[in-house]
Each structure stands twice: as structure tokens, then as C-alpha cells.
Image (cartoon, rainbow, N blue to C red; front, side, top):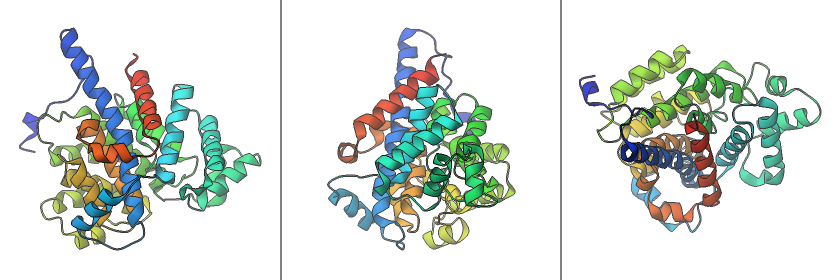
Length: 332
């Protein structure tokens, strides 16, 4: 915690003078863009290594350079759905968001969806309320990372109010992942994105400060324990130990903390964060997507390699969604 005094919180509205206010607004806009574009690029690069084992960083870098197009998966497809619904409703509306998920899935079912969401969608189409459909598919609810992977737009819209961030993250999770660990995983990922927006990138980030804040916000002991492990792992970074202690699988407790670790291990470089996340193997698209959302929100879009941005599928539309969320979030 020794570096805490050097941290500078970004506080929209605390600026003095039009020039400073404009600079801060542009900085925040760049972070909104960085978050959604960063998540999509992480997803697209990570998707090329999904369900495979660990790999050298150099191999992942070559893979990313050789890709002609960065095509995203259901992770980004559902993130887009969250953003579209939040913008259309100017906030969370469960019925609308569920319908948006369903329409997007039916338009592009080839995005790599797991078996759970389509079953939920079919139940809702058949008349099941969105609030109960997920529990019908998975009694007790799913604890997968499917709601955490798509939650970044919630963090963007509500970033000033961490209580609202958590409330709406858990609510969006309930559409498909109603298990407490699934809901709390989405909340933890949303907290991390929101805090990344609030932190200044002028000074090097203090991982201890971030972990302490997340620990105080997080409800479930499983995640609190993982946050403590992250702090112990940062100095060493041996990948086999990271996988053994944090995980690299589809369960939220074994991937959300891993994505946070990837960011805190490489806070100053989006590229290193994504390459490291992908090199861990396992559920690489989702871990890199979540890590990319946090890193992009902290560093801003200009710190994402232009060569990667140029290859991202549907980039203009993703940036437009980020811009519209920025407009809603700052309208007050």
C-alpha cells in the first residue's frame, strides 16, 4: 500500500476550466472506446487458442500478427447485445436485454455459443419469463463466466456508482447465469472495469490498492480468497502456478480472477496483457476478453496496437456503441 499516496483518482466534474474539462472528457471517451475494442480484440485473439494448452508468448504474438481479420466470438457478440439494450433503454431492462440476446443469436448463431444460452432463449421464446428461464435450464443456476465476459458495458454506463455497477451486473447475469458465483463473478469483473476507468494512468497502477478495494466490494468468500492469491502471485507469474491456483476454465471463479491477474501483471501494456492471457491456454477467448476490457478501460484506445485495431471485425460499430455509452454516462 506504500504507493497509494501517489495514486490519482479520475473524477469527472472536478475539473477547473474548459480546456481541462475537455481534456478529461476526451480521456474518458478514449477509455470507453478502449474498453469495448480491447475486449473484442482480446476475444478474437484468444479464440484462436481456445481449449488448447499453454504456449510461449512469442508464439501468440506471431499468431496475432499473422491473422488477417480479428473475428470475435459470442463473448463480444453478447457484449454488443448488452450495450445495445442499455443504450436503447437508457439503463437495464431485463425483458429488452433478453430479447436483444435472442435476436442477435438467431441472426448469427455461428459465433460459438455454448449450449446453455440458446436453451434459455428457446424457453423465453416459448413464454418463460426471463427472470426464471436460466434456473429452468440449470437448476441452481450456472456458475460459468458467460455473464462476466459480456458485462463491460454495464461498468461503463454506471462507473461513477459502484453500487449500481454491482446491482446491474448481477441483474444482467440473471438472464443466463443465476448462480451466485456466476452473478458475483460478473459483479467482480464489472467492478474491475469501473475501477480501471476511475484510476489515472499517469502514475503506475498499485495492484495492492486495487485488490484491497475489490476485496472490500466483493461478496463471496471464493472470490475474496482468489483476490488474496492474486496479490501473492504477481511478483512471480509462473504460468503453471497461475493456472493451478486461479484457473483457466469456463467457471467464473476459475477465470474472472485470472483475467484480473493478467491485467495487474501487465498494467502498462495492453499487448502484453492479451498475449499473456492467451498464452495460459484453456478458455482463452473469455479470459483475454475480460482482461482486455479492464486493460482498455485503464489505458485507453490509443494504447491498443493500431495494427490490431485495423483488423478487428465490425470495429466501427463497436466504437459507436462505446461512444453512445460515453454520451449516456456523462450526460448528467
